[in-house]
Image (cartoon, rainbow, N blue to C red; front, top):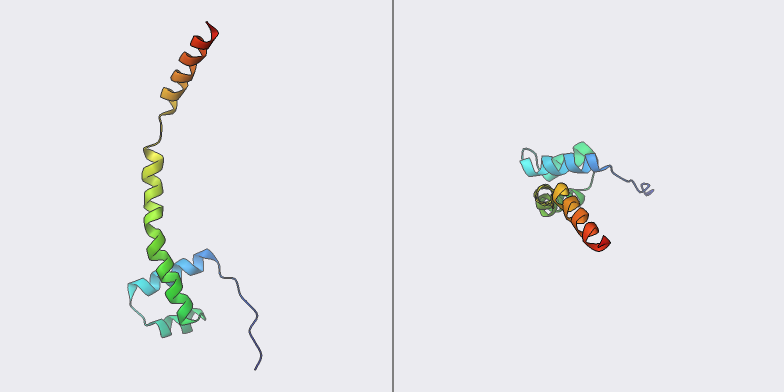
Length: 85
């Protein structure tokens, strides 16, 4: 029996398979056969998606609540004038 060459799956494929696993329309065995991936790998990708999904939405909130650029530039200008005196 020959071994299969190690494959690298794209992030798009991983996301597609993990989302299909979350939907629950098909069993892991059916998804594994459809995408030619081991069922354990599908379970791992599904777990990673669930664990990291909060990070995706958390980053947007953090970016939106960041410091105001105009306020910071005004403060820099004020401190520059104070240092000149």
